[in-house]
Image 1 (cartoon, each protein chain N blue to C red):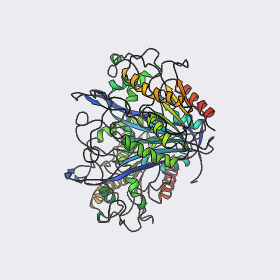
Image 2 (cartoon, chains in turn green, red):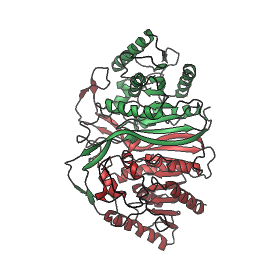
Image 3 (cartoon, rainbow over the protein chains, first blue to last red):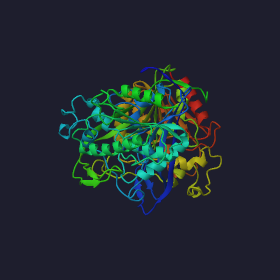
Image 4 (tube, chains in turn green, brown):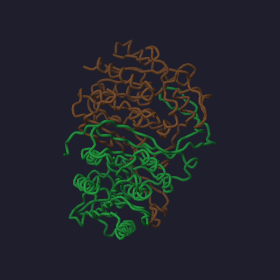
Amino acid sequence: MPNAPVLLKSIRSHYLGGAEVVAGGLPMQQQKVVGNASPRLIDMNGGYSAGQLYVQEYRLAEPRRPYPVLLWHGGGMTGAQWESTPDGRDGWLWRLLQAGYDVFVSDAPERGRASWAMYPQVYDSAPIFRSKEEAWRLFRIGPAAGYAPAGEPRRAYPGQQFPVDAFDTFTKQFVPRWLTHGGMALDAYRDLLDLAGPCILVGHSQGGGFATQLAQEYAATVRAVVAVEPTGTPAQASCQLPPQLLVWGDHFDGDDTWQRYRSQTDAYWNALRAAGQPADVLDLPAAGIAGNSHFCMLDRNSDHIAGLIVDWLDRSLD
Amino acid sequence: MPNAPVLLKSIRSHYLGGAEVVAGGLPMQQQKVVGNASPRLIDMNGGYSAGQLYVQEYRLAEPRRPYPVLLWHGGGMTGAQWESTPDGRDGWLWRLLQAGYDVFVSDAPERGRASWAMYPQVYDSAPIFRSKEEAWRLFRIGPAAGYAPAGEPRRAYPGQQFPVDAFDTFTKQFVPRWLTHGGMALDAYRDLLDLAGPCILVGHSQGGGFATQLAQEYAATVRAVVAVEPTGTPAQASCQLPPQLLVWGDHFDGDDTWQRYRSQTDAYWNALRAAGQPADVLDLPAAGIAGNSHFCMLDRNSDHIAGLIVDWLDRSLD
């Protein structure tokens, strides 16, 4: 399975959603744009597209199921988090293709290839950036005191599954994000669901929260949801929902931020279960799988967890 | 050929190059990050990675040649320009895979999934943004006076091959760029050449200029160069170079900026030919193919031109 080739029918990408905006009042600049040419006038006043989403569509020649899997990244990340692990192993994109699923990999608005718009002329505020220190702590790689700059010894949590030696490589894929653009992202994901039709959502962190929110709005379209350590889940269900799987990693002890985030998500899942909704939980440590970080799709046992998710899809889909 | 499936051995991505930088002196913020959680402290002071390049590596199960094709995008663009056309047709990525080539699609530093760093703390200046008006004129879609906002009638050049109805969709893939980062981009492309080993470079616009520059430095590694409307080419050759093909579209008349850019590139190509270097030219209008924009890989005859380039590679490679 790890080395099985994949026969693809097409690889395409799309830009969805967004709207034309106009920026004005910007000064003219004379700038050297091309190294061997003289400076030219740069006039940035004019029309732009803002708010669009970017998605790559991988279609198999012979998919095992009629539904594609839509991979939704976390906050401050891009679709690259599904392609490869920082230590150079195959990512869940490839594993899902091998398992017979068509796959869509998206960059939400303002992230990666979806691009971002100038501020304060179009976006009304500045973005926030995730430092290595914050990532080390918030992604539960190790305690805050265990972080050190590149090249110096670091202290991760004991039994850490994240490939700690590749942490600096991992941080190269962080992108800035805006904290007030949740509505913009949801709008673009709606366009993606309209394009994809019946589908499976696999969302991580912020993307897992978006997936649980839109599963309610698109309950007839979304056939299953896998929410990997989601944040920002709904408070309650508004309708009959498709099968949903919640996945938690390890190292929550002593992390106040994650205790709070997790309690909100667990409360939603408990409410789903109390209401008889098909809501499963894969608590990895409780299942005997210890040491996962916030990014189990990048951890050293990522193939194992991909297999568990594919098995759950096989059991849960019609 | 257009609908032939492709058997892939792997799809991976990599982050190459870049360096750890430290940002300090930034104010603490209390911000709501997750919709259903209370605000948390955001401390952006710390370490970041800056200057890295992102690349996707598509490997065929049975490539026809041992050399991959490296697709290098133009200024203010990302690797998405090679994946699909704005009107939804297959891009050159897919056509080259069908033709039997492994393909690498990269985002240069600061573009797309390669991410960008905060300014003025890390990058020393602000980026520039490309308006729809500038793209309409500079990409030679139509005369400046022919531009109009989305939804209003526009006037393109007669016989325009660019899919004009998809112009607004096309503009969704524009990304900001910094004018002082040429050295940073070249450094990262060197890392890419070190990773790829013997290869073929297909570069567009700014990426074509980078390809012609690095073909001199990596003359033993680069086996062929296809420079599609390159800008910023070298002044002269420093060594024996691999076969190179220069591709020009149409609608240069009356465009002063492009007349200047083109004269620099043509001078380099003429010097190459005078020195007996293998430097070919595919002037599309002179070859009876009229109406191409600056983006022939997105124009309605993109498949035709891909075929001409594959034919040239077949004739030019050992």
